Amino acid sequence: MSGLTAKRREVILDMEEFAETELLKLLKPTDKNWQPQDHLPNPESPDFLDEIAEVQKRASTLPDDHLVVLVGDMITEEALPTYMNMLNTLEGTKDKTGADATAWGKWTRMWTAEENRHGDLMNKYLYLTGKVNMKPIETTIQNLIGAGMNPKTENNPYLGFVYTSFQERATKISHGNTARFALEHGDEQLAKICGLIAADEGRHEIAYQRIIDEVMKRDPDGAVMAFADMMKKQIVMPAHLMDDGEHKARTGRDLFSDFASVADSTGTYTANDYASIMEHLIKRWDIENVAGLSGEGAAAQEYLMKQPARIRRLAEFAAAKAKKKEPVNESFSWIFGRKVTV
Image (cartoon, rainbow, N blue to C red; front, side, top):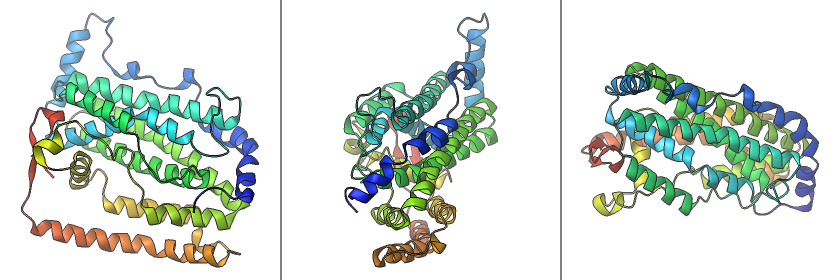
């Protein structure tokens, strides 16, 4: 499914009022939002250094595998310019001037502004723990923003908003799990931080899924085919091009793949989560009961209904295969070269 047809372009252009009345209300006014400083030591306080010592004490029991996942999640959030750029490739919804008064332009900028708080807060908090190596983390962030991403959305908003519907739910799951793990390891403040970020992702997930709800009403055939197209391509994670400039040369392994392996082994984000997200979207958009589809649309519908079970079978096979392998321990520059199992 490549570029928009004339009919589908018209569908998107006709959704400006929907974006104004339905999307923008899912964003919070700045004065109602939390800001990173609300959850960090106060540099004006006479207890500032004591507060930092408390951060470090709480973080002292965080295991290295969870630190790798936290850092990888933070780096993903910090590559925000790439995601704003991706949204501004989508035909019919892009912010053409950078300050468009359209509802779509306002949504993209204000969504970006809300998301920007996530990386800021995680970055500062992890820095204060003293348990992560900021120089290679900063190098990874710069390299990732420079490399960009290719979500295979082809400048098509149908594909782009299926991607964001999936991806926002994935980040909500990941941050929600890091919150749970932080609490289990005694860092209540980090748990609160990750929980707040997960809640934001939840609001943003709802917004993007409502866009496809609306497309489904106006063009069910196109919406179902777009969903199937993105699933056939597979949803690539936004940080899939991360590179610290040394991991591959040192280990012969891809940094993102190793990060994803640690996320899977800790239960932060797994292949079963991928299948669960797909099941959620199939149910949310009632794919099974969409009627009046073309032959191509009906084939896409049938494909989608089979995929979650297939993904779960593949996950079980991969897990069984992994159990037979010798564990591999690899060092991560992000945690001063300490090794974790990948």
